Length: 212
Image 1 (cartoon, rainbow, N blue to C red):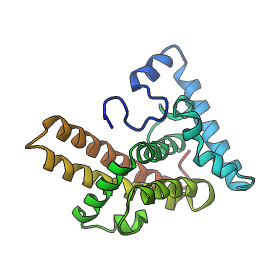
Image 2 (cartoon, helix red, strand yellow):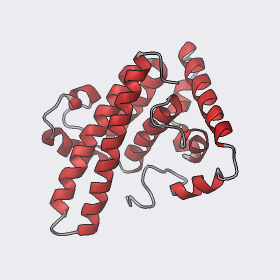
Image 3 (cartoon, rainbow, N blue to C red):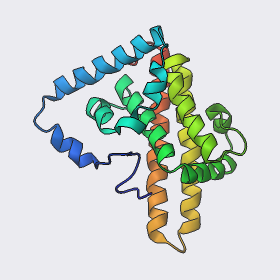
Image 4 (cartoon, rainbow, N blue to C red):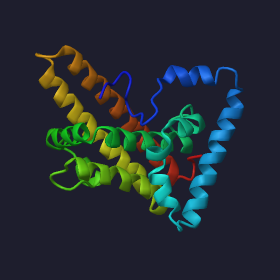
């Protein structure tokens, strides 16, 4: 998977600049209102009545429709907001689905590199292969709609920390033999570490009834 062109995008992949151009003529306040309204309506409606296969369709939405529709709704929202948190969790799911082998390798390396409870919080089995990582990413997203939303955010944050540690470890390995590959893993590690911080902050806000 190329970090430059494929990072977290499946099956339709567009770089962030495309979204910036698409929104360049739109009132940012209107975009923000739409993002928050749709995120709140979706989460509230599904959590009130998580039946009829609705949750399953939401879990598999990007497999069937790509990321563009969700990006148009939530990609420009602040990280510490409900649509921003949902966007990041969908991106994590897509990262795993798009390249489950690399995600599993990163997770196992991160599991051993970290001296923290993040592996336990994230909830992956031991060992965690590609199929297990796909199931874990789906379970975290499912928790957004059916479980304790704060727990889902905490699990996503811990998952990011484990993956970030693994990506950094792989970058160290690649540094001496493939500088481009090392740079890709380093960039991914930094991005995932940032997501971890943002999702943790979102969990705190959720528990204060302040994530909107």
